[in-house]
Length: 101
Figure (cartoon, rainbow, N blue to C red):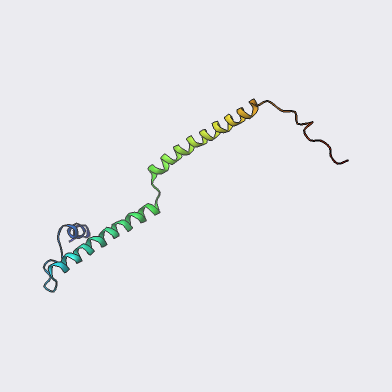
């Protein structure tokens, strides 16, 4: 019996059902724990896979987003520069009086 068959059997067939030392409720509880343990093993395996190698599709989408954000930042800087340059200049030479005497 392969590991794959055992994994699928744990979700389909209660391996504790015919155990003579267990009541029906005990066998059901043990079966739920076995299914929960298998789910956790699957989650751990998938998490390890994701942490070891990056998701190429996600990286591709993030690179496209990075380029778009760079373009947005450039356009924003240009528009701010344009707004600053359009403002009339004020003569600040007479604003500060010499009060040291």
